[in-house]
Amino acid sequence: MSVLFAAYLNGFARTQLMESFLLVALGSSVVFTYTALLIEPQSRPHWQRLLRRVQDGQWHAAWLQLPRWPTTVVVAALCALAMLLLNKLSLQTPWPQTPVSWLHAFTVVLLMLRDSALALYFAFTLSIRRPVMALVLSMLVLYGLLPWLLGSAAADWLPGLVQPLLASAPAGILVAAVHLVLAVGLLNWRWRVSAA
Image 1 (cartoon, one colour):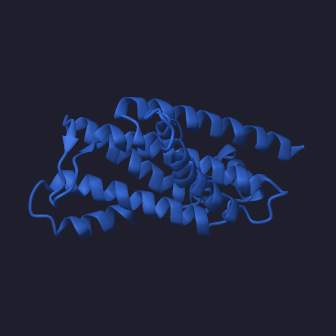
Image 2: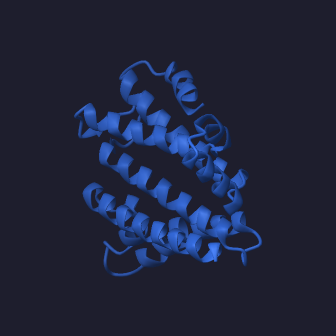
């Protein structure tokens, strides 16, 4: 869906068609991923059934039960990789905007994976009655409140620790990777605890 949406919007671009296609595909993948995380059920029994299908080799049934957000994350990762293969340090959009570094595309993908892991963590926590609301609040804190609070500090590098997109591209990727490792570790712990 995100690829078709990007292809449609790319028809309005007059120049640099491949660059604009990749940027639009990445952006639409982000929108579709977070929309799916908010509206699709992410319960532990659902994922247990999905993993059982995979273990039994029932690939068609597993594909039918797979939520939409993993596929849009894969599309976003492919877009980031394509930007790398274009071997351009900056991609100029056909409309007047600030140049977007392809390295930030990898940061976006890592943040999507981190937020997906957090969504599953909240969904697997039985004490949280409204996991979607918990996810929304955590996103507001991670993307808004903490960067704003740390932005008022004397050090300019502090906001980049909680919002990797505010850091320089190589450092942002490293910080986003650390965030992802922490989120996956938290999810793994929740999965093992909820199984007991």
